[in-house]
Structures are given as structure tokens and as C-alpha cells.
Image (tube, rainbow, N blue to C red; front, side):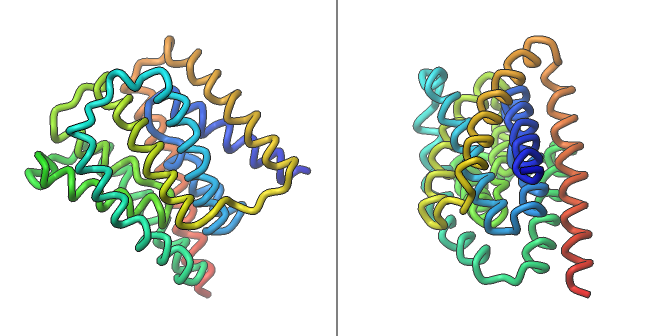
Length: 240
């Protein structure tokens, strides 16, 4: 029961920061979930939770979605999801932990630095970002940063980014789960996950009215960097 409560706390935190900052569940929670449940269980639970949060947000924000801009991102991501799922199932646990740690840490740093690149603009940029994101989402549970960098380089405002990111998260996480299946949790654990998701989204909504968006995103990315580095160290230690 202690492990299930800890799982609920991690999901609660992840749901809170994603509702607060528009991104962040997988960045904050995936490294910890991987350490708790193993690479496959942790990543698939991150896919499930992030997809559920995105779907709830999309239900109220779908009118602000830009279908023409999102189509190349989604098509490219769907094409690379199977490759990410294969890597997640084929790579030994220490190697996968190292890969997840590196991906999360690098992604957090790139978003913190606000990397600018011509390759991340226009339709070509959408295809690059979508393909990278789909692979990372399926393999490591962290597809958001690539899409965030595309939005940054395309000049999207935060108001434009959030509803489109919710569409993206809903679709790509659904395909990731279809490729890998749901995590094998007990009924009590699933109950705690559901309660934690609802509670986290409610907490995040309350905080969103009080915490500046930029500060919230920096907190999310700082937590993600810490989690990514911890997972990386765990993987390196497992090689011994």
C-alpha cells in the first residue's frame, strides 16, 4: 500500500504541473515512474496519464486548435511511435534507464535555453519535431519538448500552444498505448491514479491563477532535469 500511495503522489504532482504550465507531466513524473515501475510500466503509465490530462483539456479548448498546423506534426509522430515502442521493449533495463535519463535531461535543457533553429520552422520543422516527439513519447514518455521547441521557433504564443499541445498529447499518447498496451497495475493502484489525476488537475487550475506562467515552466523544467539526471545515474549504476 505504501508503494501505491507513493505512486499516487507522483501522479498528483505530475498532473498539477501539467495543468499549471501546459506541459510537464511526463517530464516531471516519467523518470520517477520508471524508477518505481520499471521502464515499460513507468513509460506506459506516463503515456496514459498525460493522454488523459490532454483529453480533458481538449474537451474545453478544441475551438482554439489549428488543424492545418497540427497535421504534419501528428502524421510524423504516428509514423515513429512503433520504432519507439520497439526500442522500449528491446533495450535492456540499464540501457533504457540511461537513454530515458539522457532524453529527459537534454529535452529539459533545450527548452530552458529556448533553442532556435531554422530546421524547426515551417512544414519541414513540423515533420522533424513530430517524428522526434513520437519516438521519444513511445520510448521514454517525453514527447512534449520537441513540440514545445517547434512552437517556440514558429512564434506561437502560450495561448496558441496549449490547446494544440492538448490535441497532440491526446492523439500521440493514444497511439503509444495502442502500440504497447496499458501498464499492469492493481485495481487499488488504478483507483489512486484516477483520484490523483483529478486532484492534480484541480490543484493545478487553482495555482494557474496565482503563479506566473514563466516561473511555473521553469519549476517544471528544473524538476524534470533533476529527475532525468537521477534516472541516468540509476542506469549507469545498473551497468555495474
